[in-house]
Length: 187
Image (cartoon, rainbow, N blue to C red):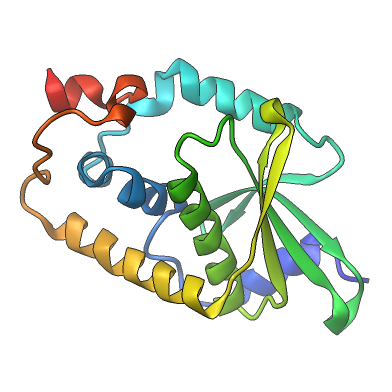
């Protein structure tokens, strides 16, 4: 029988480690300036109430599922289900979010998790974005086009990391209102 433990053991057998964290992918799509600060160790969200509320929601949601799993010390997967056995097993990665406000970034983060698992020979793999407060869910398949998007995002994350100063943002964006980095960016 295939279970979560088997999947994690399979991924642990690979000697390569991930070079990009899931949060970096999310920030790379949401705001490159936020990504730049984050890659410099300015992790502003540890004491941020909105992040704490999101973690609590994730912990309270779907109690019977394997939760908060780490892959290569870089990916924190909210939930993982394995259906079926052996080579017919299907792995479903769940990403729990408070709202659909940053849906594009959320989707890319989940796609990156699927991509990373597939790179480690966990296949077939599928993803689900879940919004418990809204009672919504969205299936997120790792299509060939999605693989291209993930690889382009990873390249852009590497480019932003290499910048000597944070990327310019001419004026605050709508996402800045609820951002833990607002003070850093806009004073």
